[in-house]
Image (tube, rainbow, N blue to C red; front, side):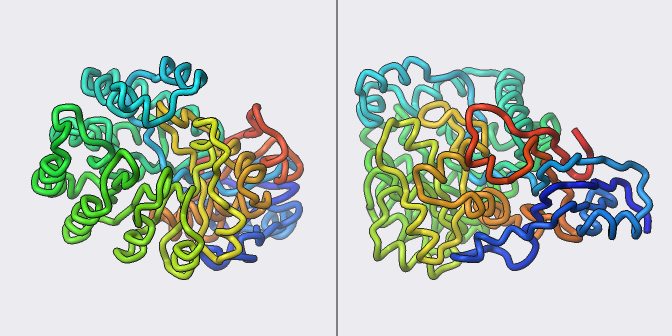
Length: 410
């Protein structure tokens, strides 16, 4: 059989082949093949198996020797705010001096600081800054990225962010999943008139983002949008055919996770303070629990989502960077894995599943990426390691030796 690429001699090939998504004990099954190989044809996985077997079956135009290294599916980052201009270094220093997230927002900083910078930036400047972040994500093994709007907060600025996503995909060579987050914060011009801003989101923004965004997200929490406001936005989005995501239970439990469950959201994200009873109900649903350990780390918080409890409850647990300029300027899924194992109680195998197959499920891509199985995209990472557990064990460097997206070695 013909193949475009034959990757051989992976010391550990993690295929994650099998049921999708993974829950409970199933999250520990990585489908490991020793001295493994991957055959690629037309940008997709043609077969996986032992090197000797695939070497006998396939004649390849190009052969790539992994040299005993770990090979696994490229990471999927299912929650990012990667499109923005500027930075929030001053606020970082304020946080070091003890200022809280809410105090920084009340002082005119926080999300609105980035909104001002993003509105002021030209298209090329915004593309340049965002593409550089995506390039660094790719260098650390990520091939699929969910990309939110939410730093425009007026009709044209939100539309502009979403219209730039296809060009960002071209520049970065990554698979991008666009999400509308017009309900990220109440903009300054609507201060004290949050319901009027919700009118704008529901009546003007949502109908116009159809075709530009796949999902609609809402930040429902203390200091952001109320449960009633979030429900109104999400119901309208669902009626327009958009998938749903919810920023839920980051600072306070307002019922946002329950709302995500009720509306059949694809994911509920953050979940740092979700009550046990709600966790049990969400775990029995098809809504993924997207955990963001870097947010707690960035906030200097001792309060992390209880990943161990989420896995043990049977939830579809996924991991993401939450890459954003304020609380989590993180571009590395391996560091998110290392944090999740130390601070959330996940095992290395569970964290890998959460960063690949389950993360793909959390952005509606489980049938396309997240595992190395015939027919799926050949998005592959080669680690400069002999044991996949080094992803959790080591931190602060970059273990990624090579990244292959769509069968094309980078």
